[in-house]
Image (tube, rainbow, N blue to C red; front, side):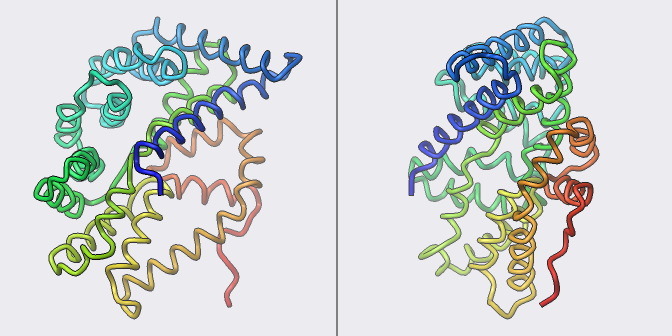
Amino acid sequence: MADHIGIREIRRQLGCAIAIGVTSLLIGCATSPAAKSAKAERHLQRAATALANQTDADSLAAAGLLSLLIHRDEALVLITRAIAVAPERRDLVWLQTQVCHEVTSCDPEPIERHLRELDPSNGAGWIGALVRANSSRNDEAKDAALAAIGHSDRVDIYWTTLSARLSRATAQTKTISLEEAEVSIIGVLAAQAIPAYGVAANACKGEQLRRAEIVEVCRGVARAFERGDTYITEMVGLAIAKRVWPEDSPEWIAAAEARHLYEYRSKFWTAVDLWNTSHAEEYLTLCAQNRREQDVFLAQLIAAGKNPNPPRE
């Protein structure tokens, strides 16, 4: 398996491709793929410039996020400006940590400490510390970070909040449509906002689980991830839960049922995507109203006319 740096780079390139590639499809008037991509990039550049000229936190954060596609050095400056406007915004501090990881000169530790102060029940503030301890082979620091995640209530990356607020701020510039704004913001968020969960997953498998104290910690880690605000976070939690609980336990059975439910609902991704193309405003409203991506997807399924519950066997 590729290490977390390789996965991050793949995810970054994919997110950038989504943001520019799909935006070029929405533009749809250039004569060649290269021309479409260039035009889409110009659209995003205009949007980022217009956003950077605003003074509200959402616009500045959106400008920073889009700048990752074009002028990466400006991204952290813009998001730092956004936090100066709204210093209590946990979602923006989280975004700042992720952008910081993309900038060689940036030290993420003070930002992560700030996030933990703002949102002490969120284990996401410890992911960076876990990754660094793993990379440096500092077992004591690794165990401490893993325990902190295990004692947290949840692992949130503020996906729905950032999607709703930054997409709307981008559309309000009138430089691109709401649909383009949504695609662009979510595309770049997909590249940046999901942390390196592999380290947490690998810390709770194999030989490590011969230690009773690690098993107990990993049970807490599983619970925190299962309560997370994205499907990928929840799936990591479910995988860990099935390693650290006996197969006849309520926790293992609940994890298996949750995985089965996800597999059933994920068959409708295409139908939900089709619904979303003509309901951008409704989608962002759902994001604004719901903390978890899972709950947004459930509402989309129902709106698209799909039964969200698998048939009884």
